[in-house]
Length: 117
Image 1 (cartoon, rainbow, N blue to C red):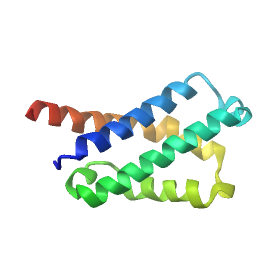
Image 2: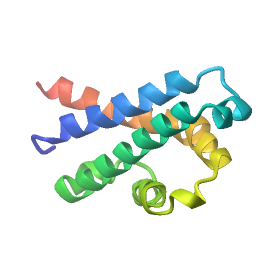
Image 3: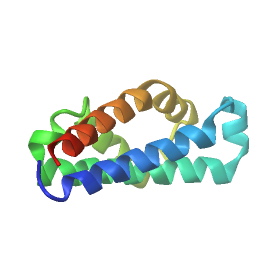
Image 4: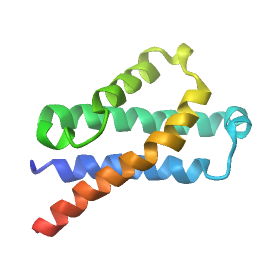
């Protein structure tokens, strides 16, 4: 694992944890009605996508452990460049379905680093 990798992984975990907590107990209608929440979640998804992109360039061996990492990067690109195409239901699905697996993977990778120290 490269020296900057733990920081990148921690950034991913931090963003994912933030919007998991911010959306807990809220349904799709709540999410759609709260512009600040939507924008905060989308911004954190952008950061995750950018962090995964950087990780893939900087430490491709570690990035390979993140399931569907090219799709995470592509989703980030959609959020930034295709803002008018964002589907709130898809964002909620990512949060509910894909996020727990991502957090688990990142935590396992970070725990592996801590065990080496």
